Image (cartoon, rainbow, N blue to C red):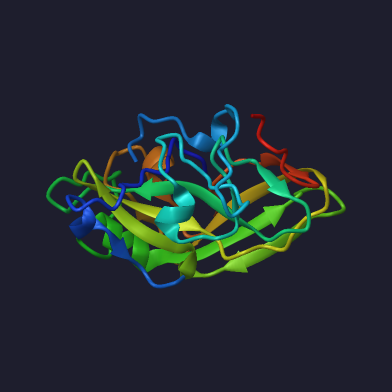
Length: 223
Protein backbone atom coordinates (compact mmCIF):
# COMPACT_ATOMS: atom_id res chain seq x y z
CA UNK A 1 0.00 0.00 0.00
CA UNK A 2 1.19 3.50 -0.79
CA UNK A 3 -0.50 6.75 0.12
CA UNK A 4 0.60 10.39 0.35
CA UNK A 5 2.41 10.47 3.69
CA UNK A 6 5.21 12.60 5.08
CA UNK A 7 7.60 13.04 7.90
CA UNK A 8 6.11 15.89 9.86
CA UNK A 9 8.25 16.52 12.92
CA UNK A 10 7.85 19.44 15.30
CA UNK A 11 11.09 20.90 16.62
CA UNK A 12 11.48 20.52 20.37
CA UNK A 13 10.93 24.11 21.32
CA UNK A 14 9.51 25.05 24.70
CA UNK A 15 6.11 25.60 23.13
CA UNK A 16 6.03 22.11 21.61
CA UNK A 17 7.97 20.08 24.18
CA UNK A 18 4.80 18.97 25.93
CA UNK A 19 3.46 17.25 22.81
CA UNK A 20 6.53 15.14 21.99
CA UNK A 21 6.21 11.59 23.27
CA UNK A 22 9.16 9.21 22.94
CA UNK A 23 8.20 5.59 22.37
CA UNK A 24 11.03 3.37 23.68
CA UNK A 25 14.36 2.98 21.97
CA UNK A 26 13.33 1.36 19.64
CA UNK A 27 -0.69 12.91 7.48
CA UNK A 28 -2.31 14.83 5.96
CA UNK A 29 -3.43 13.03 2.78
CA UNK A 30 -3.09 16.24 0.77
CA UNK A 31 0.71 16.16 1.00
CA UNK A 32 2.84 14.35 -1.55
CA UNK A 33 5.04 11.75 0.12
CA UNK A 34 8.73 12.62 0.10
CA UNK A 35 9.48 9.08 -1.08
CA UNK A 36 8.08 10.15 -4.45
CA UNK A 37 9.90 13.49 -4.64
CA UNK A 38 13.12 13.93 -6.60
CA UNK A 39 16.18 14.94 -4.64
CA UNK A 40 17.00 18.64 -4.68
CA UNK A 41 20.67 19.26 -3.85
CA UNK A 42 22.46 17.85 -0.83
CA UNK A 43 22.39 18.35 2.90
CA UNK A 44 25.17 20.22 4.70
CA UNK A 45 28.04 18.36 6.36
CA UNK A 46 28.34 19.12 10.10
CA UNK A 47 31.67 19.40 11.88
CA UNK A 48 31.83 15.73 12.84
CA UNK A 49 32.02 14.75 9.16
CA UNK A 50 28.62 12.98 9.07
CA UNK A 51 25.89 14.53 6.99
CA UNK A 52 22.64 15.24 8.81
CA UNK A 53 19.37 14.50 7.02
CA UNK A 54 16.83 17.31 6.62
CA UNK A 55 13.18 16.60 5.88
CA UNK A 56 11.44 18.63 3.14
CA UNK A 57 10.23 20.85 6.01
CA UNK A 58 13.79 21.61 7.09
CA UNK A 59 13.71 19.44 10.22
CA UNK A 60 17.02 17.77 11.21
CA UNK A 61 15.88 14.16 11.41
CA UNK A 62 19.18 12.96 12.91
CA UNK A 63 18.75 15.37 15.82
CA UNK A 64 15.03 14.75 16.23
CA UNK A 65 15.35 10.96 16.38
CA UNK A 66 18.82 10.86 18.02
CA UNK A 67 20.44 9.04 15.10
CA UNK A 68 24.20 9.23 14.56
CA UNK A 69 24.34 7.23 11.32
CA UNK A 70 23.64 8.41 7.80
CA UNK A 71 19.90 8.46 7.04
CA UNK A 72 18.45 7.33 3.71
CA UNK A 73 14.89 8.35 2.84
CA UNK A 74 13.89 12.00 2.30
CA UNK A 75 14.76 13.69 -1.04
CA UNK A 76 17.97 15.31 0.24
CA UNK A 77 19.09 12.15 2.01
CA UNK A 78 19.82 9.62 -0.72
CA UNK A 79 23.60 9.32 -0.65
CA UNK A 80 25.49 7.06 1.77
CA UNK A 81 29.19 6.37 2.26
CA UNK A 82 30.39 2.93 1.19
CA UNK A 83 30.71 0.29 3.91
CA UNK A 84 29.40 2.69 6.58
CA UNK A 85 26.26 1.79 8.61
CA UNK A 86 23.12 3.65 7.55
CA UNK A 87 19.54 4.04 8.77
CA UNK A 88 16.35 3.85 6.72
CA UNK A 89 13.73 6.50 7.54
CA UNK A 90 10.33 6.47 5.87
CA UNK A 91 7.21 8.66 5.80
CA UNK A 92 5.21 9.11 8.96
CA UNK A 93 1.74 7.67 9.58
CA UNK A 94 -0.82 10.25 10.64
CA UNK A 95 -4.22 9.69 12.19
CA UNK A 96 -7.23 11.62 13.41
CA UNK A 97 -6.78 13.13 16.85
CA UNK A 98 -9.51 11.21 18.65
CA UNK A 99 -12.68 9.16 18.29
CA UNK A 100 -14.86 12.29 18.18
CA UNK A 101 -13.31 13.47 14.92
CA UNK A 102 -12.48 10.09 13.33
CA UNK A 103 -14.31 8.85 10.27
CA UNK A 104 -13.93 5.31 8.96
CA UNK A 105 -14.77 3.13 5.95
CA UNK A 106 -17.96 1.12 6.15
CA UNK A 107 -17.61 -2.01 8.25
CA UNK A 108 -14.47 -0.95 10.13
CA UNK A 109 -14.40 -0.74 13.93
CA UNK A 110 -11.16 0.28 15.71
CA UNK A 111 -9.84 -1.78 18.62
CA UNK A 112 -9.04 1.37 20.64
CA UNK A 113 -10.95 4.69 20.60
CA UNK A 114 -8.01 6.92 19.62
CA UNK A 115 -6.79 6.14 16.09
CA UNK A 116 -3.08 6.56 16.96
CA UNK A 117 -3.45 4.22 19.94
CA UNK A 118 -5.13 1.75 17.60
CA UNK A 119 -2.23 1.98 15.15
CA UNK A 120 0.41 1.46 17.86
CA UNK A 121 -1.50 -1.53 19.24
CA UNK A 122 -1.60 -3.25 15.82
CA UNK A 123 1.82 -2.24 14.47
CA UNK A 124 4.14 -5.27 14.54
CA UNK A 125 7.11 -3.77 12.72
CA UNK A 126 8.63 -3.64 9.26
CA UNK A 127 10.65 -5.59 6.74
CA UNK A 128 13.21 -3.51 4.84
CA UNK A 129 14.41 -5.06 1.58
CA UNK A 130 17.43 -3.67 -0.23
CA UNK A 131 18.14 -4.25 -3.92
CA UNK A 132 14.84 -6.09 -4.34
CA UNK A 133 14.66 -8.31 -7.41
CA UNK A 134 18.44 -8.51 -7.84
CA UNK A 135 21.02 -11.16 -6.89
CA UNK A 136 22.07 -8.81 -4.05
CA UNK A 137 18.58 -8.73 -2.51
CA UNK A 138 18.64 -8.83 1.27
CA UNK A 139 15.91 -8.26 3.85
CA UNK A 140 15.98 -7.10 7.47
CA UNK A 141 13.04 -7.42 9.85
CA UNK A 142 12.44 -5.16 12.84
CA UNK A 143 9.75 -4.86 15.49
CA UNK A 144 7.84 -1.89 16.91
CA UNK A 145 11.11 -0.23 17.94
CA UNK A 146 11.24 1.40 14.49
CA UNK A 147 8.46 3.69 15.72
CA UNK A 148 10.79 6.28 17.25
CA UNK A 149 8.54 9.22 18.07
CA UNK A 150 4.97 10.50 18.02
CA UNK A 151 4.68 14.20 17.28
CA UNK A 152 1.62 16.42 17.30
CA UNK A 153 1.13 18.91 14.50
CA UNK A 154 -1.93 21.06 13.99
CA UNK A 155 -3.73 18.86 16.49
CA UNK A 156 -3.00 15.59 14.66
CA UNK A 157 -0.61 12.84 15.84
CA UNK A 158 2.11 11.51 13.52
CA UNK A 159 4.15 8.35 14.09
CA UNK A 160 7.76 8.85 12.91
CA UNK A 161 9.91 5.88 11.91
CA UNK A 162 13.56 4.91 11.49
CA UNK A 163 15.26 1.52 11.52
CA UNK A 164 18.26 0.52 13.63
CA UNK A 165 21.59 0.77 11.79
CA UNK A 166 21.87 -1.37 8.66
CA UNK A 167 25.13 -2.88 7.32
CA UNK A 168 27.19 -0.74 4.97
CA UNK A 169 26.94 -1.28 1.22
CA UNK A 170 29.40 -1.33 -1.66
CA UNK A 171 29.56 1.72 -3.98
CA UNK A 172 26.86 2.02 -6.63
CA UNK A 173 23.11 2.46 -6.98
CA UNK A 174 20.96 0.56 -4.51
CA UNK A 175 17.27 0.45 -3.65
CA UNK A 176 15.28 0.16 -0.44
CA UNK A 177 11.65 -0.94 0.00
CA UNK A 178 9.70 -0.89 3.28
CA UNK A 179 6.91 -3.33 4.13
CA UNK A 180 4.61 -2.83 7.13
CA UNK A 181 3.46 -5.73 9.30
CA UNK A 182 0.11 -5.32 11.08
CA UNK A 183 -1.66 -7.74 13.44
CA UNK A 184 -5.10 -6.53 12.34
CA UNK A 185 -6.51 -3.99 9.91
CA UNK A 186 -6.00 -0.38 11.00
CA UNK A 187 -7.69 2.72 9.57
CA UNK A 188 -6.42 6.22 10.34
CA UNK A 189 -9.76 7.91 10.97
CA UNK A 190 -9.08 10.51 8.28
CA UNK A 191 -11.29 9.17 5.50
CA UNK A 192 -13.81 6.61 4.33
CA UNK A 193 -11.86 5.20 1.36
CA UNK A 194 -10.20 1.99 2.53
CA UNK A 195 -7.41 2.08 -0.06
CA UNK A 196 -6.33 5.55 1.12
CA UNK A 197 -6.85 5.34 4.88
CA UNK A 198 -6.26 1.75 5.97
CA UNK A 199 -3.42 -0.73 6.48
CA UNK A 200 -4.51 -4.38 6.07
CA UNK A 201 -3.58 -7.20 8.41
CA UNK A 202 -0.38 -9.00 7.52
CA UNK A 203 2.48 -7.60 5.45
CA UNK A 204 1.96 -4.92 2.83
CA UNK A 205 4.25 -2.52 0.89
CA UNK A 206 4.47 0.86 2.62
CA UNK A 207 6.91 2.60 0.27
CA UNK A 208 7.98 2.26 -3.32
CA UNK A 209 11.35 0.91 -4.43
CA UNK A 210 13.48 3.91 -3.39
CA UNK A 211 16.81 4.31 -5.27
CA UNK A 212 19.86 5.83 -3.57
CA UNK A 213 23.57 6.13 -4.21
CA UNK A 214 26.45 4.72 -2.21
CA UNK A 215 29.76 6.52 -2.80
CA UNK A 216 33.34 5.97 -1.63
CA UNK A 217 33.26 9.21 0.33
CA UNK A 218 31.35 12.50 0.44
CA UNK A 219 32.67 15.26 -1.73
CA UNK A 220 34.29 18.11 0.17
CA UNK A 221 32.04 21.21 -0.01
CA UNK A 222 33.46 23.95 -2.24
CA UNK A 223 34.67 27.16 -0.63
